[in-house]
Image 1 (cartoon, one colour):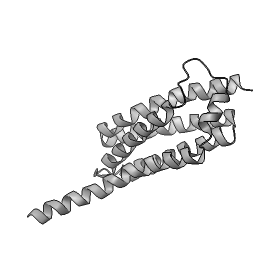
Image 2: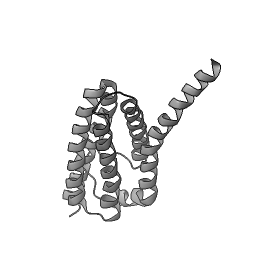
Image 3: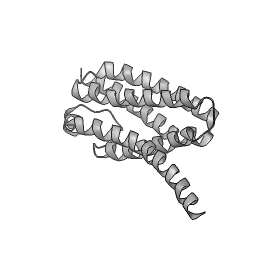
Image 4: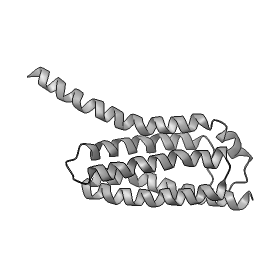
Length: 163
């Protein structure tokens, strides 16, 4: 009996760890690949409400962790929508990853803003899918959506101020 409980726990820990690791690793790789982003951020003309550069890695770490927990809830569900929802989740994660390069490496501010708007729409659709499967999973994505909204404000303002 004890072996069965341990086995079930391991069956849950591995998928949970993977679900948590995927977005965190995605963010870590994007952040590492654009290590000069804090320096670039300091050189830009910034709009009102712009946070100091040290805030971004803290916020993103929390958001990526919430994404991971949310994706685990969806993964463990029995919904027929699960694969669609997770496919959209991974697609938006790729868009999120690429935005960093467009904005910081290429400094393509208008293109980055348009890209971010596509990502924003993807996240809305993803949240709606998650809501149909598990409301807790959808709610865990709301801070991400709100941060993307704030990021869109920053991105567009930086485009306008740094032409």
